[in-house]
Image (cartoon, rainbow, N blue to C red; front, top):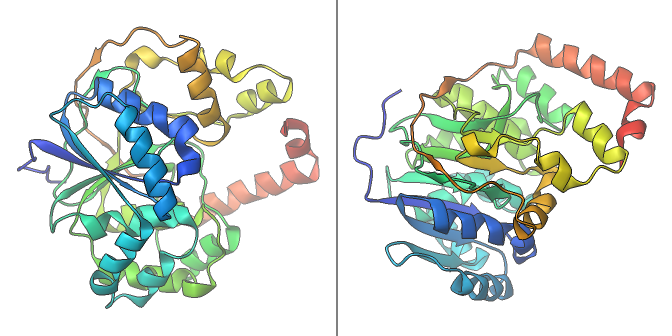
Length: 324
């Protein structure tokens, strides 16, 4: 994997979100502005004109250092760009109007210059320490690592395997890094093979696309010690089930070693509570760049074995036990 050799003095960051994400997204942007040692241009891509107004007002209240820039763009602005840029790719063009999460795949490329880096951020992140982003590869993809696997729905995963599409294991898109030189013709083909306009409107379809792209272009996982995803493990499920607070559960995380924490799922609602309560340790510098870990393939045999275990757990009532 070739590293991006001409890194801009301003990192190019993108986040797709609605105004309803602000209760936790505000902490993501606040901590980014306070602790990122890279200069950056942040593009927020949202939904309606009303969302744009709300997000703009919220961003204006944050203390973002003057060397950084930000902008908020509505879906209508993205739609206008897509009319030209995605016209040759009908499956990708229609994919944008599925689940809002799917736009994390399609919309940054509408605003990035050719070959320019794209650091794509989820809104449910928190940056606990002073840090720099990793170098973005000139070719290939960087993703966060999260066991076990969130590739859903089952029928779409099976369709991928039936069409000879390889999938990466443990992929998480709290942070994704690539350059704007992806093979859009292949991505268009991929979406068509997965179901095209018949795809179920499930947020997790996005993970299947990222997993397929990872095996197609190569790259690797961001080191999970520095780029850490909260895991909804059996232990954490049971703690939640029996009333342990989110703040208490977060205290078990090693925040002093992290550049970024992805509070996926229920954990994103705990972050504002923990920040406001002063639970996080004082920020330190976590500046070292660690080499990415090569992607691990999720073979059909491994996937089908995991499905058997999940089906057994459902039959014996495990998921009812751990449901809050």
